Length: 192
Image 1 (cartoon, rainbow, N blue to C red):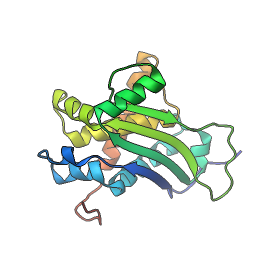
Image 2 (image 1 turned 90 degrees about the vertical axis):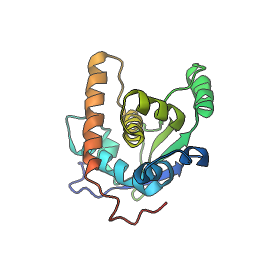
Image 3 (image 1 turned 60 degrees about the horizontal axis):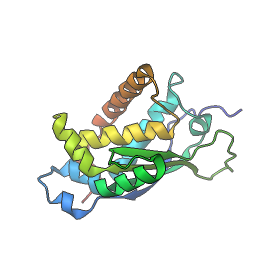
């Protein structure tokens, strides 16, 4: 059996589709615009989150993720109409939702060396995120991080079928977001 990686090197290849320009016309701060348009910001967050989860044996994380340093996933920012269609097709619910994840991991997979391990895809409705950020009285940036971290945990095998499992998942999401609060964007090469 493979042992977890001793270092924190991790490469995550993200197939990213940013948001349509209409939302960007709203009065948004620079960092929020980055979260809506720039893959580099998500690479920083998601790599940090995966390293956090895979380094803590008390947290659910497939052994394949703990032992591979090449991972891939999709992150697609869409509107309510599109997520409603996905929700109807795949979950039989003809209503918009905030985030939907499609995990691709199978613990019995064999991944050749130097090949990327596919985690799955996350679809997020920015329209719903905007509504939720206003109703929860926090920033859109925070809401986007909250929803993507939730989707990522689902890709890693987390479920919340009980109130206890939901509470644990939400607590981990908060820790993940705290991990990336110290990332600074002013000193990075990220540009709109």
